[in-house]
Length: 57
Image (cartoon, rainbow, N blue to C red):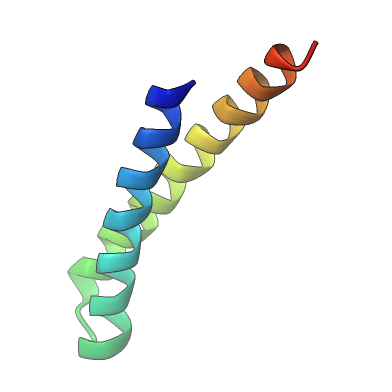
């Protein structure tokens, strides 16, 4: 579970960095990277939810 949390943190950093570049500088490529990171975050969050529910049983 610790590894999953670390993956989520790392992916969020990628998202935040690219989203900021898109908003501040209008960088379209950064927007695409931010969207990809958001999809990856969504998958990781679903895995976290599944693992968390399993651990609490």
